[in-house]
Length: 334
Length: 216
Image: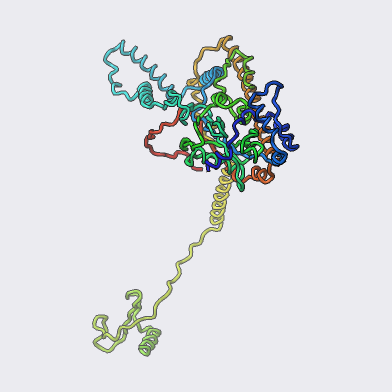
């Protein structure tokens, strides 16, 4: 199966350059059959692009007619997400407000039973001491006193010290192991793979072409399991694609004889807690569990622009806002 | 046997038989009072002078106690009143709602109000100002957060609309499959996040589960 995908996505070598900027203009040019790709700026044409264009012009009339009949290749891609395991740390603003709430809660609360006994015992001890100073030998009857509130507190503290919670930063964080599922527990992680598309591998979400008889969601599920291993357990969020991007195949490639370009539909899936990690197929040269920022560094900007639209994430913890700095609150609206 | 019984019945009717009162209850035995000489006593009576009497299936009625009708009426009245009281009580309880323990402040606690209130220093003017300003900037912060999230949601919906439009342009069938509700795993639940990650080798201590909630 993976071999088939490799075949069909071959020759998408310069797809990066041709991710459609606006869908509307591209589809219109497709419908009218005008498939000539013009360089953006005059003079920006590289030697390579010039060669490609010249070769396209040399094609026979018949070949050209065939080209006009070509279709878009439908492709499903999966944005697989590992949900955060631990809560995000608080930023300065959130910390100050949480502290205020804590303080207010303490101030409005009444003394608990335990606090009351502790206070009473403290008062009793004081009185006793005074009495003892006066007459030394009297206060022997209370020698076998029951556990005091302070004793209880000490016992509870000791018990609490015995339990050490797991660390919020893991070993994978220290090693900066981007392949580990156990990294950056407070963030959403996205699976991004270095997939063979055409001649060169590209950093993308795992993707593959649609086959007859499938729905796009079924394609997405098949593709994910074919590329990343059958043991991965994840739940897809509905059958409706979350995002879309398209790119044209280079004219000189084999696949361009059949397809005009690729239309990629993105589906979202959440990784289950007990799922295995990725076991990459031959097509996958490398993979990463990346945060949003790391994803931005990894994939090409145009691709990121497309996927960023359906990534619901706000990294409030990284915001530098404090209680007095009101203007920087606008940073939120990025 | 039947012939014998007839004879004895006739004798019994003429009052010649001993009363059955002295004999065991069911097996009433009687002897002939007047017998030939030499067999007049019970002990030396001939065996065939013993016979069954017919069973007595009833007992004379006890004498009925006369009760004053006024007392009877009073008794009836009392019974009726008791029943009415129970009904009233039940009706009253039906309106009573099950108390929510968290909402009910115990009387003991209310009595100890003076004892339990914390004795704190009053906040200075400076602290009060700081708190007021912090609350205001917190409100602003949350407001902007809300706007940012709404923006993001709009972008996401637009992205999805674009994807659906493009899919429909390619194939109506695929579009219909995408928007159908099949394969929708609802209700969807997600656990977490928590403050510290779970410990993989942690065995939680054993304990007894005691349900102390009251029954109503």
